[in-house]
Image (tube, rainbow over all chains, first blue to last red; front, side):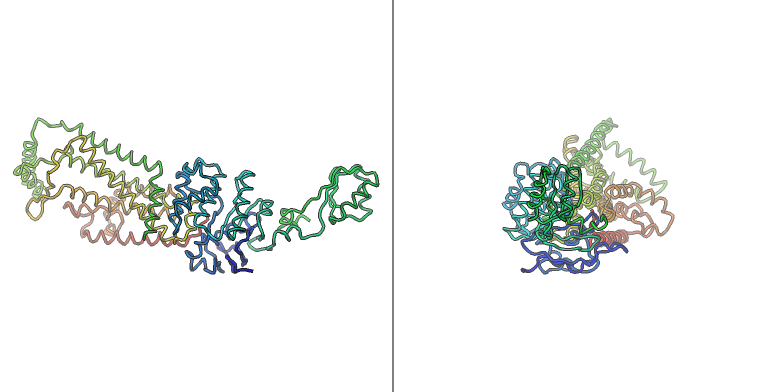
Length: 306
Length: 312
């Protein structure tokens, strides 16, 4: 594989005696969208803050293109565009002046580039209005615009779809995927919208109590198991339960006329046929694809429930 | 360097494009107009006498006073009055162009308050609004960002000072005309009366006001950076500005009070011949004490800002 763009090397963060981040190590590669997942308070935002240099790490190091964020901050950070938590911009200035503000802080951002980015995030009609008149979604777009202004190779987005309507979420998602695929950007996304992460990310790192519980590629992460859960809507249900038990299918739970069964994909038509032969009315078969959310809960705390 | 100027430009943009800043300029203008109008209103006072007659009467009193208690001050006042009568130089009272402009130097009290308000918010407001996160994740070091903010604060103070001067000139011209524009500033030194430039004299007065202004602005900037609390920064600094002289009166009986910050802010006694706050204090002494305070404030501000974790 290619050289990683970001390397976390045994990063540790302590607040007083409390260790918030315990020896966090992972690499991020160009062209991938890396999802950062974890329950509240797990240390996601702290980690992101350390990557962008807002917080000092107690031990370890973070390298961006091989440059340490500790000793070569300016060289390292110039490759990074970021939104940390909400995109907080200067409300009393227009969107355009906000962008001019950030353009002045780096070398080589022309007026043309500003217009280009504004166009890209679809703010052209209202860019000269004050930010305080913007909706949350528009602020999110403006935040994205300021992060992209200097054409960074790494994009760090904390909750990028927060406050966007479904169309906006879809747009941002497609846009992030395009940046990664076409321009080879490495994107780090953290989000509490797990289903969103599933659609957006290539790899997902799960962090819990300041430790990386696992890094999975989305495909393997979600579809790891051959068996899936199938929901059958049946009548009469009791007769169906007897039949299902006889053939040794694993019943997960029964809910009214719904029966949840864990089985292999290939076994679905066979079971359906058997049910129909027994004069059981089959109203619906629904394959419950195991979502990232289920897996996530399983990995982070599912054990407690079982 | 070019990049640094752009950073200062950014900070200026953020300060001057606030509605509250515009309000400050309007308030300053209103205050100066008020001072001018009050002076204009009392213009007619005692006008049945010419200024020569008034000065002669004043000299008569001063001579009596000098006989009873011969001091340097009375002697100077007498000499200057006599010089005026001899050379037909009308005094620059509050109803002349220069007199009015000179009165308006008091507007610097407002300027100080306004500059403190801006200095007190320039760092903490970025923390308050969360914009600090986007500001600091740029290829610019934290010290440079802080310096750009500090330079912008001093620039704002300067702009307010210049505005105070320009407004007062316009108001003086409108209310009193350009009467006595060429009259010189008279001062007494080494036993003789000398003529100086009135404009330079007024600039000198502004300069004296700038000394405490810069110190208070720096204190507000310090508190704003260290506590990230705008209200605290503005409140404490303005309290210091108001209560400084009171504290000083209380401390005057202690010899060490000459090392107190407030005791060294007013440099006018070193120029107008009034005695200093404590015996043995000189311009050099005050300048040194202030320089030490200043460097401590600046060092503390920078160290805190550089080390701090940003959790806003």
